[in-house]
Image (cartoon, rainbow, N blue to C red; front, side, top):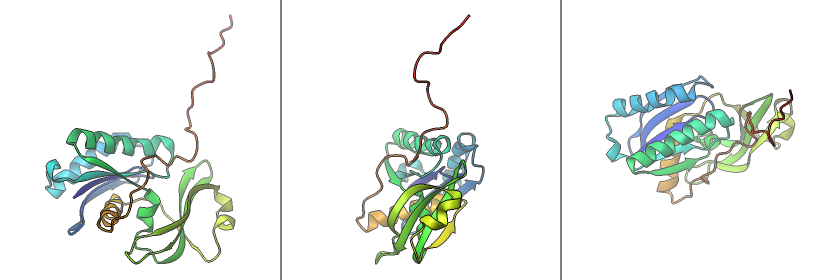
Length: 204
């Protein structure tokens, strides 16, 4: 049984089980209020599921791609909850959760702001019904997505990531002996706010 958290677009939290499926899920489409709501959604999912924290095997963290400010909230929440509960963190690429259950060749595209998109290309699913990512995640200008997409791939423009799907993908990967994602956030570009290169010059 897993608690899953993703803040790569909005904020989504779920409790899932490999046999029982998605037991509880709560989400918000607000793309900027992650820090204010993620704790409330975690509490709501645990309450609705009736699952004690001790029964969880781990905490799934959506690793993006996503904007720096929003994405880091979910990853930090997953790591903090896992640390406090004495559980492992299971990193999963957020685009892979969107791709779960899709057929044929396709591209998942999500908003990266600044007139850009994150995108990943897939072929599959494989024999275990798991998505097969062949390219990305990568960053492209919104108007150049069609020219970047490999021939024969349809485009899925996703506006949310389901933590339920994220958690079920983690369960399926584990059940089939597949590796999880690298434990590194997929920001794909520098944060909006950066430190200055040197001391501020003072004039008077």
